[in-house]
Amino acid sequence: MATAHKRAGRVSDIADFHVLQISNAARALAQQGHDVIRMEIGEPDFSTPKPVIAAAEAALRDTPLGYTCALGIPELREAISRFYATRFGVDVPASRVVVTSGSSAALLLVCAMLFCRDDEVLVSDPSYPCNRQFIRTMEARAVGVPVGPESHYQLTAELIEQHWNERTRAALLTTPSNPTGALIPQDALERMAAVVRARKGALIVDEIYQGLVYDGAASTALSVTDDAFVINSFSKYFNMTGWRLGWMVVPDGAQKDIEKLAQNLFICPPTLAQKAALACFETETLEILEYRKSQFRARRDLLVPALRELGFRIPVVPGGGFYIYADSSELATDSQAFCADMLARTHVAFTPGIDFGTYRAREHVRFAYAAPFHKLEEAVERIELALRTAVPC
Image (cartoon, rainbow, N blue to C red):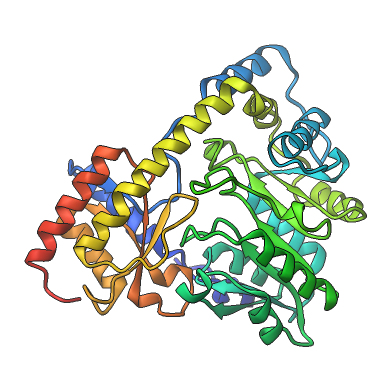
């Protein structure tokens, strides 16, 4: 029997996560015994590094796992501070580091701190869908700004100036981006930070794929501004998705409000995950992660030319992350139907563009190359075979 409870308006405004429909269908096929190649979910296929697991085991044996400070244990905040200094040459005091229950919690805290009803936040279209829903949950509105190959699928200072109005409170950037893998150059970040600052707005930068940059050295927005809320995660580069741990660096002066919100909304991040994450910054762990990054790069370098050969258009080679955002318009008129058809016929799962926005969404699909090299090769072979006998979608 359906519940008669009245629901808040925000619930109907929040869209379904379409990738889960593909994911559920892929899981059902696998349960039926089919060999399904999963390229729809943004989760590394590598297990958590052994030194991190060992640190968790030691914590289970030796440490009372009670509540911690809402901002995270001091030793982890200090380790993150040192990581910025050693890897990026940026001085980030541990007092500005906030450990969170995944990067999702970090963004929710920032939205709760900054936005009121009907405030507007500029985001790129396409972009990660949950970011829009976080903003809507706080009664604000995400304004999608169409972006394409001409701006490397990223916002620019000019686009921010063009779309900023009296209701705009912030711009949310992601580098490397999901779904495109596109990077924002440091000079472009600096110009955007200046535009937002001049309008007394907030700059939020999602850097959760920062460790997975393949062409050149990784960077951080903290190199060009101290005013931004910079969000990161232990999920992607550090291979700790299920541990639900992230962090953010906040502007000096924002700590008290963030702490108050974190205390009330989350109490504290997971204690065991925090203890385990201390091992992420050890030399042994970083060597493992850098090797795995090289595997991701090899997968990208396999998949981009192979998909182009099949008829997908990829005007911008992804510089980071583990996604390829491909124009499928020469192969199908509706990418959602195309993804469903390819899954049914080839047992290869990938994501329709409608998950990431509205701008040319039905002309694009996203491939996640978080699968072994030989599986990616097989996926290409299956798709190629299916396209030879494809019925247009």
